[in-house]
Amino acid sequence: MRWLPELPKGHLYLLLAPRSIQRPLLNEFIARLALRGEVQVLVCGNRFEAHAIARRLRQDTAALEPALRRIHLARAFTCYQVLSLLRRHRNTILPTIVTDLPDLFFDESVPQGERLKLFRDCLHELKQLSRGVQTLVSATPVLDPAQQLFLALLQAAAETLWEFEPLPQSPPQPRLF
Image 1 (cartoon, one colour):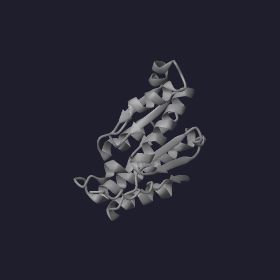
Image 2: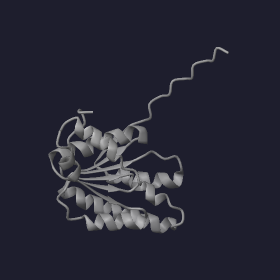
Image 3: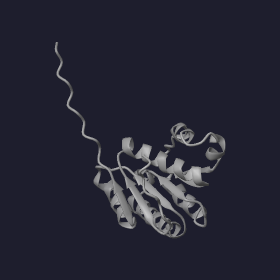
Image 4: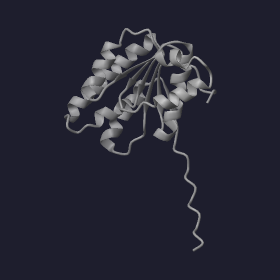
């Protein structure tokens, strides 16, 4: 995956792909940035593949531990915490990757109107952040119309969208017996 593009500053990038495609791409971006310097990863979907990233780093460096220490993690567990994380990191100078941003906004225990306001505030924070640092956000496609609204807002906020579709499944081989 050495063909992945660079992430210039001043631009909000969105990686929209099924998890099976998205995870290796995110791991590659994180590893690439960690090889060059520090990187901040804001985990919103409770998924971070530290072992896969370590394996990827080991391909390019024998100094694995220093490269891993350059990855700064922060994790949100609710939609309220996502906004708090983004505000806390708004003045960062580190390249930033935000994983699975919309996932925590699908929580139906929080009223829809409140979730939408929080999400719009998060998008504002991301736009501000992307002006100064490399910023990549990931999301997965959704089928639920209520969830698609969040994804549509995120797509509208992103300056660049990288969208990947699931790989076609080959039909099962017929059984002989």
